[in-house]
Image (cartoon, rainbow, N blue to C red):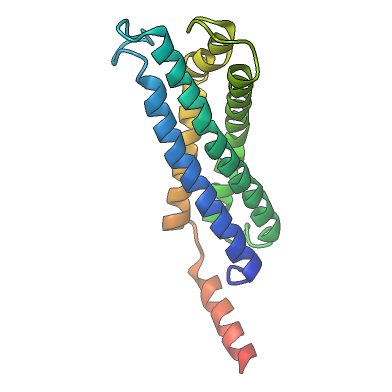
Length: 190
């Protein structure tokens, strides 16, 4: 496995940094968004929040999308490049195959969420002035994300956590291959 080359190390660093920033940013953004709603209800807005506070919360949510979406994009592109770079080793490494499959299966959902984030940001900052929380831009992109996309986004999030678990514990790994690889590199280096 070519995991000790500079290219693979760089791609692994980009993947790790991108996914960690995306992961943490997504949790923070979800906490900010759910602050608008009464806990344990089906998205009932807190009635003691003013319209300005609700709109500012959505704007804060949209600002957080910038760094989380960019870091996801960097991590995803690096994952695709690493998959191409390690394509010969995927058959021997079951954990690597499972991690790549989980990342690629959840990518369409994350790309749809990124699209919603971009449309929300464009509508809030470059569109018409938002006066009420019930305006079309907030309903079409923010509320849609937390009503219709909550299950797919949760499943995508869990798929990424599973991919990380596969990378850490490496199930279906063949340790004989590592021994043969290490012996061949030691013999070739003498």
